[in-house]
Length: 190
Image (cartoon, rainbow, N blue to C red; front, side, top):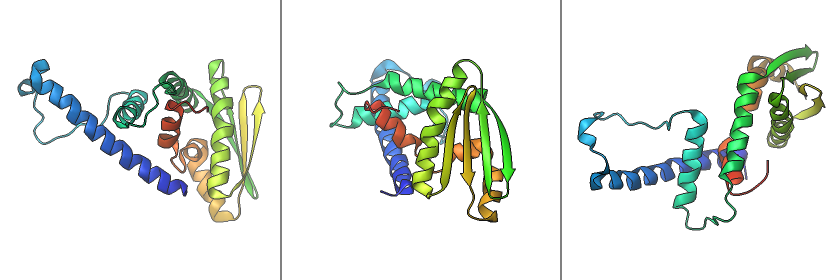
């Protein structure tokens, strides 16, 4: 299935599930657990569950809870949590040196301590996904302090695009993370 279609379907499923969860929780509040009259927001609606990793967990748990086919014996929210920790370390604690050559760009991603493990866990997996979804020629290589990603550009426009994105923009391409998070919560490995 097309990765963009999967991403769109993931967002739709997440929104519907979150709406159902809010409705379910709101019913409990109306039963006297919480008095909404003390803190009205008018027509504004909140959609963020707080810190982004927590918000991702809220979405996944809501989907699982509202899916009658969920096999709870296979659910692994702790595994999803570990992945979200890796994502946080990679995005916030790594450093990148970019090298541009005539027809390719390389990102050497490094860190210290646990950040190295997060880099080495996430970068090859995501680069492989991008290679598969976009058909790009991507090479990943584990390094002592992290990993190196080299992408061969088919033309100058692609090279300009990749230079503009940089490593972190590259990691955000073809948002498959929502479906990946759901699959991890269902017990699939990284």
